[in-house]
Length: 121
Image (cartoon, rainbow, N blue to C red; front, side, top):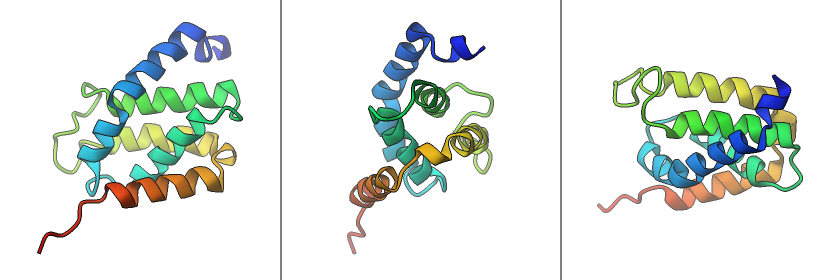
């Protein structure tokens, strides 16, 4: 199973899925998803060349699940839509939390602060 997690073809596919839709999903989910900062920190961890291959592959799998619109519980269902995404991300991020550095977390916070919509009133 470990070889399957880091199989180059599978990892490359997950990386394409994440690259194609992650930031768009982050912008749509801003203010609606309490785990968004953790997801973005995980993204930066996965993009970090210092992160081990198994860590990158695991995070990319969880982020791909978050990005793909067709999952166990569709995201548009109020109150439940992101619960499955949160569970998958939480589980993976708990397993690899020691690889998510303060730098990843700070960068995530800064990006989300920049992306946050401003009040026009």
